[in-house]
Length: 456
Image 1 (cartoon, one colour):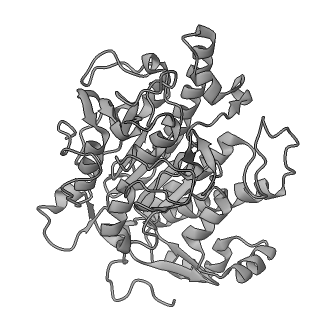
Image 2 (image 1 turned 30 degrees about the vertical axis):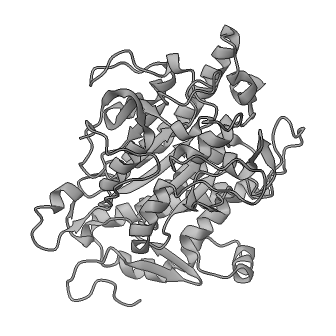
C-alpha cells in the first residue's frame, strides 16, 4: 500500500491495514472527516460520516438480590443501591429499567426448568420447547434479527462470546437441553449460535484471515499481528496529523496489550484444583475468572472501535451456574446461594457476587466511554444491555427483571434515570425499541407488544 490517502481525499472509514493473513480495521480518525451522530444525520448536508450505532447484550445468571438493586425513586435523582454502586462513574450514561417481564421464561404449563427458559427466552421472547433431545426450538433472538438487516455492513455480522463452555446436547435443567441454559443467541428457531469462550480465538476472528495451518505457523514465529502490518501502518502514519498518530498509537497499544495477556495465559501452568472449585479449561483460556471477563470486555471495545461488528452477545456465566467466587470470599456455589430462603448470611454472599458482576460491567462501560469517536465516545454510540432472565433467584421469578441499558444510542437515548414501567411489560418491547434505533423497524419480535416509551 503505497498511498492510503490519495489526492488530498479523506481517509476511508473502510481502510484496512493488511499483512500475512491479517486485516486490521482502523478506528475513527480525524483524517476520515467530521463524524455526526445518527440523530444529526437526519439533517445532514454534504459528505460527513455518520457514527454507527452498536448493540451489546450481557447476561448474568441466577437473578439478583433485588432489594439491593432496585432504586427507591424514579427519574434522574435516584440513588444507586449497593449492587449498582460500581456504576457511579457512568451513572449519567445508564438507565435502570424496572417492571420488565420475560413471560416465556415462566413454566406456562411446562413445569420445572426456570434456568434453561430464562436464558433461552431472554433475547427471543419465545417459549422454548421442553426437550433434552435434538428437537430444540425457541425463536430468533434480537441480535440475530439485527444481524439479518445490518450484518452485511461489517466484517462479522455478529459476535457471540462467553466464559463457560456450553453443550449442544444433554439434560441440564428439569428435562431441558443443555443448549438452552448455555446459549443466548439464536439465528432461527432451531439454530442456536454457540459462543466462543477462548479469547485467542475471538482475537483471531477479529483480525485474522489465515487458515488454521498458517495461523499455527505464524503463532510459532511469536510475532505480534502488528508486525505483519508494519509497512502499511508506517505508510499511513506518514500521512496523518499529530492527533491521528496519537489515536493510532493508543489503538495499537490496546491490541498489543490484549495479545500479551493472551500469551501470558497460554504460558502459565493450569491451576491444579478440584473440578468443583474451578472448571478445567483448555489451554489458552484464563483460569482467573475476572481476567477472562476483562479480556473479553477489551475485545468488545476493539470490535466496536474498529467497526468489525456492531452486534455482540456476552454470556458472563451460564444460567444456573454454580460457580464459586473464592477470590471475593465466597466459596459456596452461586446457584446454591441464590436459593437463600431469606437467610441473611447467604443473601450477603449473593450481594457480593452481584456486586462483582457489576464491577465487570463498569469496567466495560468505562473503557467504552474513554474511547473517543467523533464528538463523543464509543459508549455514546452504543446501547449496552445488562441483565438476567431471572429476577429473584430464590423464587425463580421472571417479572420486574434486573435490566440496565447503558449508552447514548447515537443521541437517541436520554440516560441517567431510573424508569419504572407497568407490571408485566414485555422485555421484548425493549428489544423492539433498540432495533428501531438501529434503523430496523419490526412489527413484532417474540411476545413484544410495541416499543417502550420514555427512553428518549
